[in-house]
Amino acid sequence: MSVLDEIVAGVRLDLEARRAGVPEADVRAALADVDPPRDPMPHFRAAGSSVIAEVKRRSPSKGHLAEIADPAELAAHYAAGGAAAISVLTEQRRFGGSLDDLRAVRAAVDVPVLRKDFIVEEYQLLEARAAGADLALLIVAALDDDRLRALHEYARELGLTVLVEVHDEAETERAVALGAELIGVNARNLKTLAVDDATFGRLAPLIPDDRVKVAESGITGPQDVRRFVAEGARVVLVGEALVKDGDPEGGVRSMTGVTA
Image 1 (cartoon, rainbow, N blue to C red):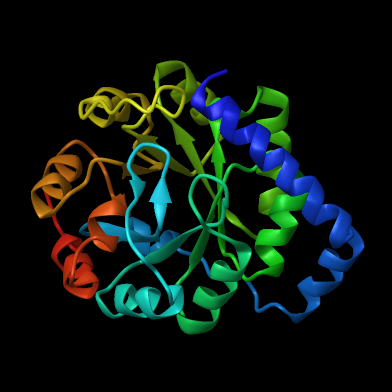
Image 2 (image 1 turned 180 degrees about the vertical axis):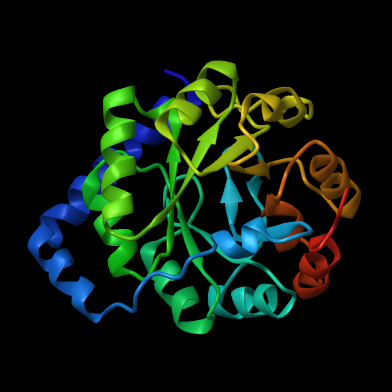
């Protein structure tokens, strides 16, 4: 099994446990108490780089990254620095996240919030919206075409903006054919955890200019943002560099508004 296969297997086990405790009907009922989703796309399409700042405790590749006792406080610093959106890792086994982290962040900030997880079932999209998420991640490598299309359509029905993540040429072609408006190019291959800094520059030309291109992984500071913006990124998603920075607000600010 690849690293991605192992992660998804764990995600499915945890999903079934949650579904057994909270029936889908109850999750649907909770939607009535959630504010309408916020649309991040106008900010993402505006001039200069937009930052999706991530609440991330650990990762399969780097292990422990940071103690985040209060994800809401970290998110507030991100928002104060000008983050266009906040990404919250909700996968527990490998990343140490939870839906409670997402709820806490949603209550603390007004900017759009992304549920960052390995979504394989519609139930997870319902959970995301019920917890206040405005965006959801779909990873092309984890889904066949039928599942990808069904989940993309269902997310949009719920009002979620979908970040469709790719890692190679074939996945990029699938995301484009899907009609994805927001396409993230992850320099980290989730099957091997290897990082190739040239991935974005190689795949970005395959994505039409009317789509918003997001650079993910390997972003350590403004110099990386400038390079990715020059290669066509409108948005950068940054986690590790910000959670390890002693000044997350300043870190976001330094990466925001960068032009080619």
